[in-house]
Amino acid sequence: MRFFADHCVPRSIGETLDSEGHEVVRLSARLRVDADDSAVIEEAQKIGAILLSLNGDFADLLRYPPEEYAGIVALQVRNRPEAIPAIMDKLIGYLEEYPDQSHYVGKLFLVEAHRIRVRSGT
Image (cartoon, rainbow, N blue to C red; front, top):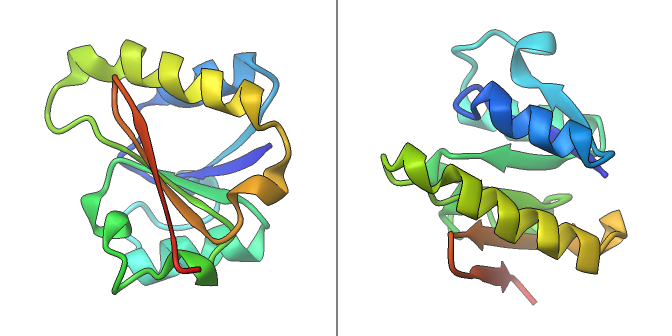
């Protein structure tokens, strides 16, 4: 799968996804680091990638209706970096269970250490 990692996503998360065979495009390779959120999600759309972010703004269903995007994965770290390994285990398990990128289109995935909540506009 192809992901577009927002500037707030630690390099270690991208490396974990890379090691699992996924493609991770870093925001800094395509946009200025201080790019507006609308430019970030637009770039993810442009390159056909699932947006990967820790930015809670992308979990706002009114501002970013999931049905309009190729997928949004919002990692729910909440200033607890020690939760990242458990969150990544949960995400990797889900990606293995649902390996087709089309499964993620039109959905928002809120990934926590103990669960993944899926929201869609349909």
